[in-house]
Image (cartoon, rainbow, N blue to C red):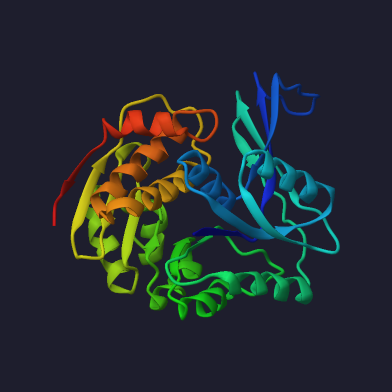
Length: 306
């Protein structure tokens, strides 16, 4: 069974404008509201690929109620903790003549709610997978991912971490099954700038040496690199297509890797499916569909280089 954790989910309010002018009223030409948050995106993409999961997280207020309703409408199971005050954040994303994001801080979490969230993790067992994805809100302990890993790791639960900086590094000694930085985030971990697959492969190997079992590094249109648990290194090329929306493409790559690994336990198949899933979402206004992923999977090219 797959589980995802989103500590600070959001309603993403996407607004498309023809142009943006300062100091006057601007009117959008299109608006949509979708449930956001990295863990939720992974659950949604797993659902698109035909795999069930349960989404953990913290919600609050009427916006939290609406987010829960929308996620259920998409067919994703949830096991959220409802906070006693505050409201689930709304993030505004602007598209068109101006592109940018305004992300809210989110509600504060009290100690009782935090304990309730940890209690939900007690259902995890051997062979389950827990995806810890995204940043940690200011009201929560900075080492909360480590505490969650400690709780479930002894049961044999497989851990996936999609985070940045020291939040990611703090989890490495617990041998996460998969980590997925992009090449900028990987470079920041080591204080370097990475531009080529060869450079990325070196530092992905370092991250694997620090404890991660599989290191999947996305490079947008330049493809991806995988440093696998068995010591092999793979380069992958992104399929050709028109990028429409990159939001959720990294989360889709995580979901695709897990979906591809489920059957034959093949890192090559997982790598290919991850690339196809990330690309399918990047080429779509929403997250990619199973049909789109299967179509792109025929075009994905990977090669073992080490």
